Length: 448
Image 1 (cartoon, rainbow, N blue to C red):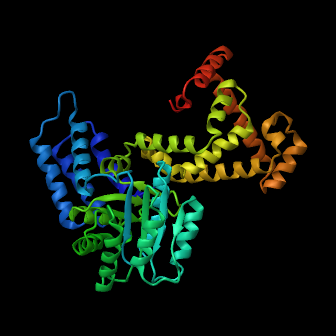
Image 2 (image 1 turned 180 degrees about the vertical axis):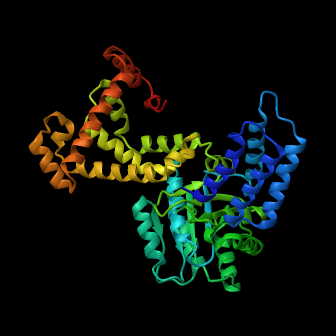
Image 3 (image 1 turned 90 degrees about the vertical axis):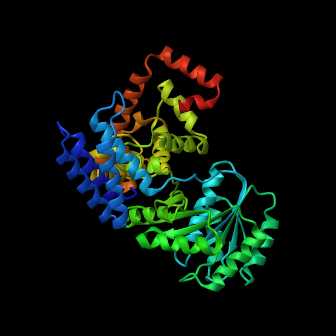
């Protein structure tokens, strides 16, 4: 999960308030001290931390709880508000037809992030084109081309051309019918004059609506000065922070960038091509504090429904009571595509406070093993698990590289799950009427 250590420390600090029977001045001071320690350990600037805690002290002393709100809830709300303010607000990335130029120093992850961003827009229904404008780094074109193939997005470039603005100009013409064009550019080890001039030349032919600075969040507090330097040079419109999955310095990077009043539009949360999230300060803090983010979880689920044509068939199978191992197999694939269980759990209010770290990893591994077992079954066995007797169990165990106990465990879980589905859906008549409504109406009814 993003900034897992910081989130755990913040939840522990707030737990002092929520778990107490009486809220005293001493308790508030201890809580504030814990909040300071948590933020400093995450590399947040000392002055920012002091300003943050001073605002909390002033608001707790001078503001009265709203009608119907307890003093505990009031203090938690103040902490939430000030944390949101600390990491910055600003408008989110707009999904509309546009040209986007990616800029940044060498090794910050521009090319990979360009691919991730292209996928993000593709999933929103936009036609996307990628332009390979990095003419200095060896194999930059090849890397972007491979990413484009992986996400089914066309890439324009010319590995033999050394004039970046010419490539971009030709690419803009080539992609004239695309709704969104994303330009990958060169980087340097520092912000040098030739880099600034090259970026200005590219922008002159691209007329980009967004100039997004890609920053490695592991630079911590240095992210602020870097964002400011790029903005003063070429006028960046937003920042994407990469490598936010678990880095302690991520908190410092976010707060440092927000101090420059730069708009953080996305954060990279892993190495997978799908691991790029729109940044929303309120949702981000809500997840850190264990309050969840159900709207983002629903977006993930809807994405999976739209991308997997079998999803509605699985829903019908569940409602009809004909749920097979084949349906269960498709479910596991959908869950895996939505992301690691740890990430999914962080979206659910209250779940993260149980600190399911080890269990979560065990569950993820168990899902992987189950998928291997089902890969070793025949189509007939997955469609009708009742035919799987001792000899078949032995063959499946050997074929999947597991053991008989694991195979029987999967079959037992499947039988229990099928019973639960039947109980939840009720009688055959009830299931029949639900199915008829779904078939008659828009398939989006299933999302409800």
